[in-house]
Length: 162
Image (cartoon, rainbow, N blue to C red; front, side, top):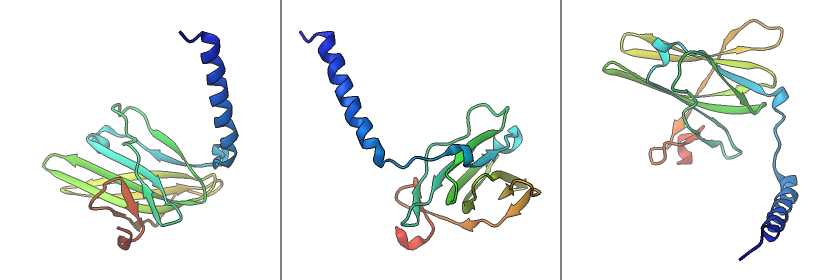
C-alpha cells in the first residue's frame, strides 16, 4: 500500500511541473479589462441564451456556455479580454416567435459594453452600447458573424472559414 507521504510527494512534483509550464501561458490583466454587461429584465431575457467568444488570429472563436443564469433578478457582468474583437450570440424564444443574432464588436480596454434586445411583435433587434471613461453611453456598430453549420460553438468573421 502506498503511504500518504509518497502520494503527497508525487502531488508536489506534478504541481511543480505544471507551475514551470505556466510561464508560457498568456495572462490577462482583468483589472483593466473591458466588461460586458447584460441588463436582465425578465420580460426580455426569459428563455434567452447569450454566448461570448474572443476572436483568434484566424478570425474565429469558440462560444462558451450560456452566460445567462436561471435567475433573472440582477444584471450579469463578464470581463472581456481588452483590445480584441468579441463575438456574441443572442437568442430568445417567446411565444411562437424566436430571434437569433450573431454579432462581432471590438472591446477597448477599460470600457463597458451593454447588450440590449428590443422585442417588437414577432421580430427582435440586438444592439450593443459602449460606455467609455468620461464619455456618454453610445450605440456602437456591430458586424455580422457567422456560426458554423456543423459546429454551433464555432463562430467566424467570414463564412469561408468553414
